[in-house]
Amino acid sequence: MTVQQYAPGDGDAQDLEVWIDQDLCTGDGICAQYAPEVFELDIDGLAYVKSAEDELLQDPGATTPVPLTLLQDVVDSAKECPGDCIHVRRVKDSVEVYGPDAA
Image (cartoon, rainbow, N blue to C red; front, side, top):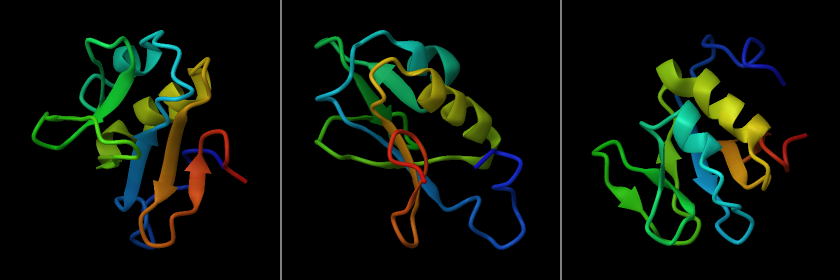
């Protein structure tokens, strides 16, 4: 599924969330380069998602909403991640739309 295919229209585009599997994170920081508003490397060298209030979310499986304005950057992060650890899914049914488990 491309970003163009997942566009506003049925209300789902603004209802995406992203999370990082730290067990697979390689700490390359590519995600933080693409979308620093969403991702950040912590002192442990691993990437984490950030809340809308810019707070680092360090709980395993923590999710944060994907702003539509940053969707392409988040998708690029997931595509380029060497650890295949970035997961973007729909909130309403938890189906992964970008990332290693996307259909």
